Length: 274
Image 1 (cartoon, helix red, strand yellow):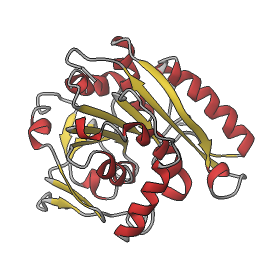
Image 2 (cartoon, rainbow, N blue to C red):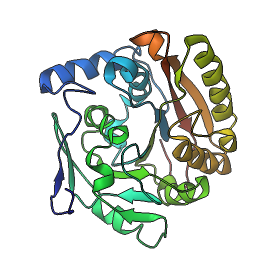
Image 3 (cartoon, helix red, strand yellow):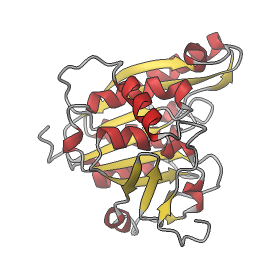
Image 4 (cartoon, one colour):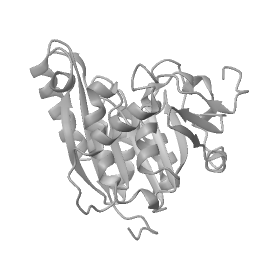
């Protein structure tokens, strides 16, 4: 992958962030999705979900993905954005690979959609940015379960700004067959009570579409979140909180916790009918 010659990005985090055994992974995902009781939901246009190991944030992400259980067949493309953690990127990095693999199989990359972004100066093509990036990979098994026929547009967000992100997402907003997924954790390594206060304030900012109030201390994926909020506010979308917890609630000590939140954004584009 380092030279961009491979056509498939292999699963790099299977066995650490989530189960490597396919049967165990299916069972784990099914358990997270089952936490939401079956009912008729309007299909979200976008989700904001966390990206830690499944023991920590899987249930928080699963509650958001469960809103799509009755709508997965209508999702033909998933536009997935998350922050870079290991490789510096100026702009938003698209992969050169044509498939991403997980223990559940392979997801096809929508190469035509990525090629259609080449006119945007903030888009770069860099497999290194994706090779070990967990913010995107941990979402893939959920997407394979919820929307197994959907193609993927994965973008690793580096050094850029919210407007640049919004301009990318605007290319996909109006098509009702698209789902936009933003991957981000919240505060990192504060005490339990302090983290709850911080994350509650961040949640309020998100729910008021105040992306300008976000920063790297409040959410590692603050730029993709802020870009989405900029676009969603412009289109008169609405946002609903799905879950807000931290690692002290799910697994681990309460001395130094990481915050997790999930949200669903609803709002019709010009061609929406669902």
